[in-house]
Structure formats: C-alpha cells, structure tokens
Length: 321
Length: 264
Figure 1: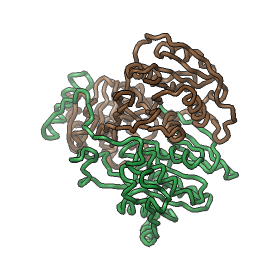
Figure 2: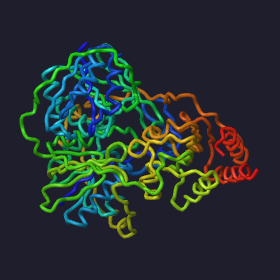
Figure 3: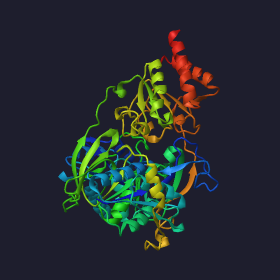
Figure 4: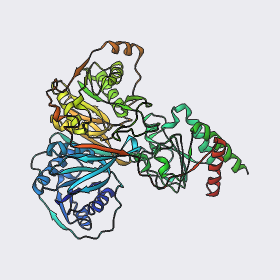
C-alpha cells in the first residue's frame, strides 16, 4: 500500500486538533503515514507531528504564514507528484474545503468530502459521510485511481497518545512562482455581545423549530423561569432573530454548561460540535429521528409550542415550592 | 459587473423526517416540500445587491429537472435577468466534480465577473462543486464567503471567509472569480408580486449534455469518481431517555429531572 498523506492544519500559531486526530486515524488504515505541513517557522509542529507519523514533510516559507488556497494547492500538488501517495487526508475545515476540490480536479483524483468513517477495501478507501444534515449515513464507493482525496470531519477519529518517532524532513518550498490571484489581508475576530454564553451555567438553545422571531418570547419565558441564558443555532442567527454572539457550533461558540436544553434544534453536526460536552443535554423536537436525540440525555418528541409553556409552569411550581 | 449564480432545488429536510426508499440510494420525497438550497438563496441576494450597486446582469443557472424552474423563476422574480437550466438523463447521479463539469460547460460562453455558488448544499453537503468549477474554468476562488466588497477598480474583490469559531479571514482576490457563499451574508429579500409576474414570462434556456459539448460518459454517475452505494440510518450513540405522554406529563417529567440534577 502506498503512503497516506495527512495535511496538518494550523492557524495563528496553533496546530488545530483535527491534525492529530487525522494522523491517529490514518495510522490504523495500513499504509505509512506522512504528515504534510506548510507554514512559516513550524519546526515545533513538525516535531510534534513526528510522534504520530512515520514521516513528516514540512516547508517553512513566508508564503505559508497565513492560509492561502492557491499557495497550498500548488505546494501540495508538487509534493504529491513527487512522492506519489495513495491517499490524501485533508481536514474538512474552512481551509480544507477551500483546497480539496480544486486539488482533486487538478490531479484528476476522486474526492469525497466531510467523511465520518473510512474502511479499506485493499488499497482503496470506502468512506462514509452524512447527508441531509446528519439524518442519514451515506456509504460511498470510489472508482479505481492512483490517489484518493478525502476531507475528514473534525472529531471523526480520536486523538491517540504519541507513539511514533517519524523522520522529520524539511523540504524546500516547491512553489517558485508568485501567488498572484489571491492575497491574505487579515483576521477579524467576531464581535463580543452582552452575554458570554461560554460562561453560562444554564443554556436554552433555540433552533429553526421556533419558526419566526415573533415566537422568541416562548424561549425567553423559559429562560427567565429557569434563570438560563439563550443560545442559538446557525439558522436562527442567519435569519437575524438572535445576534451572532449567541451562536453555538463550529462557526460559533463552544459551550459546556451544566444544562443545555435544545428546543427546535435538529442537531446537525455543526451545532452539536459546540455543545456536546454540556453536562446534561435535554432536547425537545418534533422529529423522533432528529440527530439531537442521539446526543441528548433526556428528550421529548413533541411540538415545542405545546411543551415549553407547560415546562415554564412546572419550573415555576418547583421554584415556588 | 455581471454575476452568474448557480442554484439547486433541494428537499427541505431540516424539520422533517427522512426515510430511505426501496433503492437504498435515495429518500422518499413524496411528503417533502422543496425549495432553493439555503446558501444559494443568499448567493442570489448577494448577486442582486451587486447588480443594484454596480449595474450589470445576473444569470441564474440550475442543474435539474423541470421542477427546478420554480426555484429559477423565484430568483428571476427577485432581480435575476437571465436563466439557464441544465437537464439531461446523463447528468443524474453526478458527484460534485461531475456537476462542476456541467456547470463549467454552461458558463464557458458567458461573460461574467463573478460566479457565485452556495458554499454547500442542504442535501448531500459536499461543499465542493463551486471550488471544483473554479479550477475547471481556471479562475481563482474562495469559499465559505460571508462578506464581499467589489473594490473600486472592479478588477478585485475584498472577501471575508468564515472560519471556525466565527473568525473571519479577509483576502483580496482577482476578478473574474468564483465565490462560495455562506448563509447569513445578507438578508435575502422576498420576491415582489410584480417581480413574480414578470419572471413568469421570462425564458429559461434549456441545455442538455450535447448542447454543452459534453459527452454523456463525462457527466452524471458515469463521469463521477465517487458514487453513493447506499444509505443507512445514522449510527447514534446511546439514545436519549424519551419521555412519553401529553405535554403536561412530559414537561413535568423533564422538570423533575432538572430538580433531581439540581438545575432548578
């Protein structure tokens, strides 16, 4: 079996968790694991990756100080052509999705994105991914090719303890031309709001099931009765019903309250990532197959507009007692 | 500033139960409602706003059957000027790269400054067709875009990409380019009654594989590197303890657990 390339991801001086997760997962697939790292002054990350990989190929160059899809694509395609790996794992992150499809077209390589599991059929991966916001698993078959590209969902593989001491090879930047079409400017932090939900003890997560912003008082009354803060799914924030600093999930905040009560949230992976470590998770949703019930401790399958007002009454009774 | 927007009609499954059909490769769509893919709706709005600021025209393209016309007409009603629908039995079952090939053939003779796609679709969620399209036609790209500003000379754009944790990455990109639009970038408008009436009369140019100069073996399932073998229900961890009964009872049980756990 040919080598497995694993593209490591780092941002603003930190290696992202998905890097070690992918290296740990790749080590169980059969081939030699080659960590590929593009950055500027990333010797420390290269040495760390050696604990999980059979080999680390890394490039230190100003060009890779910040992410640039064009620079990454050029460097990766050159390294792939030189080293001829059989599979390439790329994080299914905002960086990864900006590179992988273009790289696949350039290399004429099969691509499956956002995978949640891999089985091997000889040298060929058979990935699983999700459709319809996590409501179904899809088992994918890939045609025979020299190299397969997979983007891997974060937290798909558990991160192992380091157990290898791979060879660390610093290579010259394979990209000689200037990156002309795309230029990094700056990072801008999200604005802080009046409540920092990462500090809240009790959170009510409001989802698409609330249907209209004029229904928000239903959730507000519950929050008030319980003494909880309101959080939101992406759909509610996108619709402008709640401010973005309340958003929980991959592109929002990660919260770990004592209680997360999800109302009208289906529980797509993007949201669940931000709240799955809550101590107690409760969910009210009318779809019995909503993925949120797979992560919740307690659930009610019903119309939130019928249940929540009753819940407010009960909580008031308990508090009054 | 001419903008092409690629849109897809998808079933609305966010609030509905999803059932695998007998083929195991599709879902039972008989009881689902359909509409424009959510990101695409924001992409249409962004295109129309650019046209309103800088003039030019907006072309809507969709790959799909006759049913996709309703999604196209809604985009026209909001301010789109022209439309093209790509339909051929040969397009069915295509992965993101196969879809990108059809789109690439469709845009090849158009004059455009920007191509928008949604950053990802609500059904398969590949998040790949737009970036693959950019590579096929040889223009720069950025995806997960949540802010677009056309710079004064009209030759570049300043683009904000949404990263994990809500961090924004700003970059400058040459036009023409392909941008994958993320939800929340704007507030999509509703179509006016007048717009809907006008859109009903507009022509939607229909193109099949041969019109686009594509061989049937290059597109659809035949032209795909990855195909769906079968669906299964997702593997879930330990299911929640579900309280049964009338709202009165279930709410009481949930409140009791809160009390037990010291949360009330």
